[in-house]
Length: 209
Image 1 (cartoon, one colour):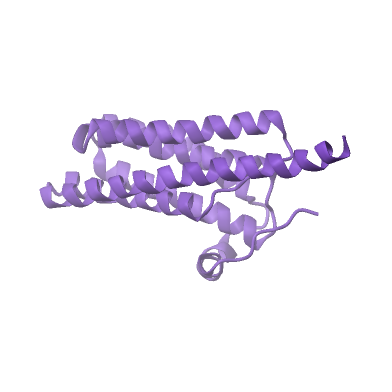
Image 2 (tube, helix red, strand yellow):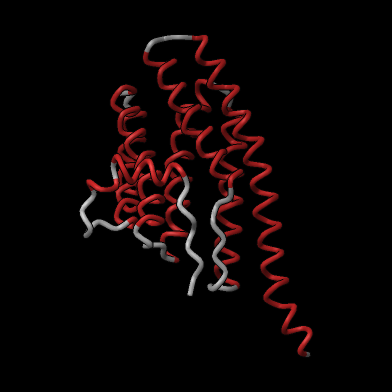
């Protein structure tokens, strides 16, 4: 039987406030699919420079990430599909907004570093999944912190653009640089866990040979 994640304080808080309002027929994967559909709508609004509406839709899409993860933990509905496509939906959402906004208002190099880091993680997960479908590695604390920093940086950037507050641009820039640092740490930690898992899988086989 698969080891299920322990409930965090955020899972318990979201359960008391929001999760109880979600019908039983709605699964975490449904929320992930909603995020896939919301992402292009967010990008369209940003291209049209409808930043207030884009911010609202982005925050709604980002909130579904918190909801589907907690819903999966609370209702014990963790699936292999969700472990792969939930983080993919996050990366597409954040990467799209970073490509449109961060490159324009913050730093084009920082934008590309963020996008490349996310792409490397996606490709690593795909290669690992192709090599051994039984090995599913979830995001660790570094990755979750990176995601929170990215969402926070984007939210502050939206406020800076909407209200024309240059001081918030500096706050957003610093938040993204911090997110890059956590992203690099997360990538190394992620790679180490993959290596460790492969060793644990192949060691008994090698010993038997």
